Structures are given as C-alpha cells and as structure tokens.
Length: 179
Image (cartoon, rainbow, N blue to C red; front, side):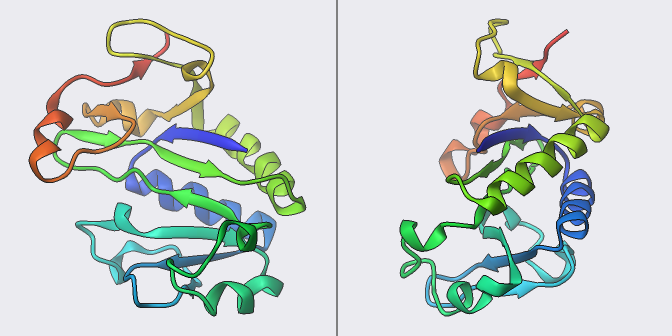
C-alpha cells in the first residue's frame, strides 16, 4: 500500500482518529533517536511539539503487536519487524505549504484492513488526482488525494516540506488539484 494525501493538521487528526476507531488498531509514535516507541491513545498534537509533528515516525498496528513495537527505538526497528504495521508519515505544514502525508506498508492483514478503511475515509473526506506545478499529470499523481481544507488553505502542496535552508522552496508552487 502506498497512499498520498494533502491535508491540514485538522484533517489529519479527524481522518486518522476515525481510522483508529473503525479498525480498533493502535497508533505508536517515536520522537527521539534514543527513545522507544510509545502508544498514543488519542491523536492530539497538543502533547507534541506543534512546530515539528512531521519529524515523528508513526505506526498503525494491532494491539497484540505492542510489545514488539514498544521494545524498539527507531534505530532498532528493522524492516522485517515492521510486517503488520502501517508507516504513517505526516507531511506537516508551514506558513507557505502543506507537505504530503503518506501511508505505506507491505502486504499483511493489517494493510488490507487499513487500505479498505482509508478508501472509505478518502471517499468521504477527500478528492482524487493532482497535477504537477507545470500542469502535467501522470499515473502516480492521479492517485494522490487532497482535502477541501487543504485547498482552501491557499498554501502550496509539496511532496516534502523544505526545512532549514530549503524552507524557502515551500513558497514555490507545488501540486494543484486536478480539475
């Protein structure tokens, strides 16, 4: 599974809260290299550093796999141990742009359930298809999603938000909705 959506932080919380509720799965996150993953019971950015929520690693998985997840730091959680977990990368926002949020996973029962539920949620809250800044479309961008709040924000849509010296690139046009 590989799904990409442009959304605001408010949409991120709404969609993922509904995803967790409908699947009964748990959300795990990591922030510091030397810290272990922890379960987050409510998707609420107020307990996190609001300036950098996109720097976190997030995983969605079954509660039965919790011991396997929380016993690791980012450095020790290998790819083969991620089987049955959905990697959730929040794209973030700054004053100029919204970064793409990505859901990815290898084939598993959890991936099939999450993929099915995301299809329902995206049908309910999002639209499909974007164009590159030069107006071209392709098979990949045809499968990107966007929300009305992302559109009404007036911000550029970037696959990756620039940080540091690259932050000024966020003010350049990125993706736009497909008509």
